[in-house]
Structure formats: C-alpha cells, structure tokens
Length: 448
Image 1 (cartoon, rainbow, N blue to C red):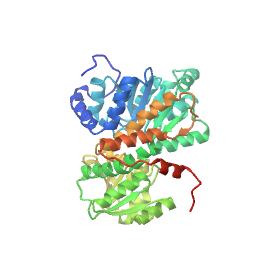
Image 2: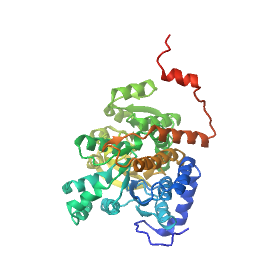
Image 3: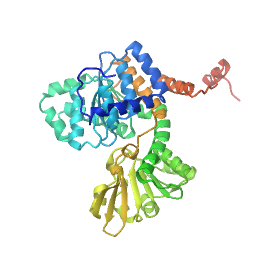
Image 4: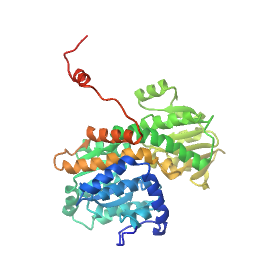
C-alpha cells in the first residue's frame, strides 16, 4: 500500500514496485527470526526518533531489514553498497509501498554511487549501517577535513559546509554496524590509526553471521551466479578458490559438492593447512593459474589475480570475484593484454580476447558475482544476519555513551537469541544443561 507522501529517492522506475513488493514478501516468508524482531520493534519502538543511514546491498532480504528498522521507529535512508547489487524493483517498492527513502540504481556509475553517499550524509544520521565501510569512511574523511581523499562528489558537498558543521554530523553518531569482512578490516585500521570516532559493532564477526551467511550463503549464491551467467556444468571442472576464510570454505565445499575438482590458494599457513586437511589441493595462484578452469576470489584483498596470472590461464578460463570490491581481479592488466574486449557475450559475461590468441571470460565485471549475476544470499540465511543487525542497532541505542570508540563484538545474548529462534523456526529442539552439569562446567573442585 502506498504511503501517499512524497519520499526523497533516486531509483530506476517506481512502476517496478508491484514486482518488487512480491519479491520482498516472498523473501519475508523465509525470514521468521527477523519477522519476530520486527513484531516486537513495532510494539516497543526502540529506534523512535533515530535517523539512520544504511549503505547495503539493496535486495529483497535487505528490504525486510529496512522494514524492521522502520517498524522500530527509525527514519531510514538506504543507499546501495555496490553498483551491481541493487534489485531495481525492490528499490522501487521500498519507496512506493513502504515510504522508505532509497537511493540505488543497478549499474549506477561511480559519480552516481557517491551522489548517493552524499544523500546518506545529508540525512545527518545518528546510526549508520555499512557493507564495506564506504559510508563511515566518507564521514570520517569529511569530519577530519581530509577532503582530497574523498570522491569529488563528496568533496563538493562537504565544501558547502563548515568544518564545524561536518564535525557536528560525526559527533552525533551513536554507533554503526558493519556487515562484511572488507569493512571490518578497514574499520580496524581506522581504530589502529586513532581516527575511529564512534563505536562500530562488527556484525560480520558474529557467529550467527560468518558461520552461516559467509559459509552457506556465499557458498551457494556464488555458484548460483556463475551457473546463471554461464550455464556451464561444474562437474569435472577445476575450480580455483582464492582464499579459505569462511566464504572460501563455503565456496570450496559447495563446488566439491557439485562434482568440481577444487584447488585452494592461500597466504595464511593455518588456513592453507586446514584446506589441505579438508581434502582440497593447495598451491600458489601462479601454479593454479595454469590448470584452473574457473577462478573465484574470496579474500577481501586487492590484486589477488594479476596480469601475470591471466597470461598463464587456459583458453576459455572463467574468472569472477565473490570477496567484496572489484579490486581482487587486476582487470586493467587483463585489458592491457587484450586486443579486444567484447561486453556481454552473455548477460553478465565479458570476453577478453588476449593478444596471445586465448580468450578469458570475466563474470559480473569483477564485482560480487553472487549479486551481479544472481540474487545474492537466500533469505533463510540472511534472516540470521539481519536479525543480528537489527538487534545490534538496538544494543547501540540502549548503551548510548557507554561503548568505546572501537570495533566491538555482537553481544552473546543477541547471538543466542538469534540462534535459539532460528532453531525454533526450523522445528529443532536441543538439550539443556542440568544444574549438576552447569556446576561442573563452571567449577574447579572436581578433578580426576
């Protein structure tokens, strides 16, 4: 139902809202924990009076998080955290049907992306949410008057405001939530450098996030994106997974389950050892480049596959990224080795014709393949991540002024709430410790 009031927004086409609402409500049927949180938020209004700016992937699952924050009383502005992850019909429905300000258009250019960052800044938020820390970075650079380090669109906006007024925006931030590994890494670097000006809850590090969202969500949705884009058979192919963190583990496990021969590359000796003991072949990327059929980066780092690696690849090799930013693949180097680049030989597949006669296919322009070429994580797994997001937001508000300006963990009680109700929604019951067992586990008197 339309709210009937004008909402500030920048979306592709509001006429797409009918389809978007169907997609949102379909996802909602598989997000019971978030629905439970939304029901309580609607009654208690723990976020009343709060202005929130969220920089997230604008998908049907995110829409249900936005509905939950709105139900809690928040005045929300939602922008895209990736130019290729927006579902335009969902963005339209959030504006038209739910009265939420959304600034997100699939395939938006870099200038538009940062104009949308400006829209989030203009909202003068008390709480932010990030998926990659772009919004928090802009806030901090702006407040510290380091304007030469921000995008021109952000700089142009900041120069219209005094340093004092920019600092005021930063000073009113109660807290922030970060959803992904890349963002947490950036935030920890900010904390180390002494520039992090408010507490940030690392939702990414919550067990109810990385153990499930990263492993099962990324694992399934990454392969979904590859198959949708290419329609290839994975069985019998050599799949090279670069990185064996939680996302890499999920991708490697799912690829093996589809019959692929999986090779893992790593820089961490402990993770490499784990991959080997999990039964995967482990080798340097320089060697894997010569034998792989499909390459998937999931590291959160830059220049994982570089020009030298591309030159060693087989004719017809396919390359994609499911880590976060598009810097994991050194595409400028690949382009310099190519005599021609043919865009969209299939939807979301670009063909690079190398000067040596080989062809290499890049899926999703090197951006997140599970969102660029598919629909992202299934609602069931995002149910846990976004319930954790919503409850972490409430935690920040309840503890306003009590939290240190650092990256902090999601409270254990939030983790247990989410896990308990997820099990309940799945019809699963578990045992409880008896009084005697609890005493034994917490005492020291009993020995051999």
